[in-house]
Image 1 (spheres, rainbow, N blue to C red):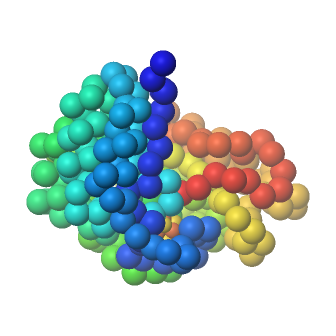
Image 2: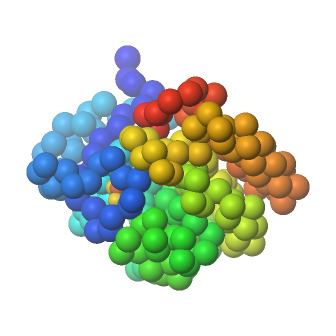
Length: 227
Ligand code: SF4
């Protein structure tokens, strides 16, 4: 029986540094070899979801388009999360031609100041333009927002910004790892944070953009979700 989901790590390298990252620096940053990918591809069957990354930046892999094409040839649905800094018109075009149908771009703030503070090395205008290119190319495009104390105030503006570009979904991710200064779920803030998320979901419904919580927001303590 073929698995319903295959998750691989095309790259354990990343070109930026997010303050909440639990993945970098990796002990041995590297790109997946083509032979390893082909071995994993044997597991991909029709209807299978293929996640091409978990923690690194997949667009750093020069054969990412070829990986997408192999997955599509096998009837699978490849998808990946990216920080969006390498989304050029050429790259979006080649991914689309390879058969990519959907993408998630991780952006942790609505304003340039917050985005670039939380994701050091990203240039906000370039990343949002990459998102726009994905939408324009016909990809089902999501943006991922890691919920933190210092960006929660921007969530409504973030949803409006994504909606105006035509983004299909805002994915809310609970911060992983132990960053006590940024944890919005400490007992004294928990109810306030949950109320904010609920009102963000209502705003999404009003604007016609899906706002979706990934992972367990109902648990206390540190969660294991990743961006
Ligand atoms: S969270 Fe993702 S994009 Fe940010 S530094 Fe870590 S691997 Fe890179």
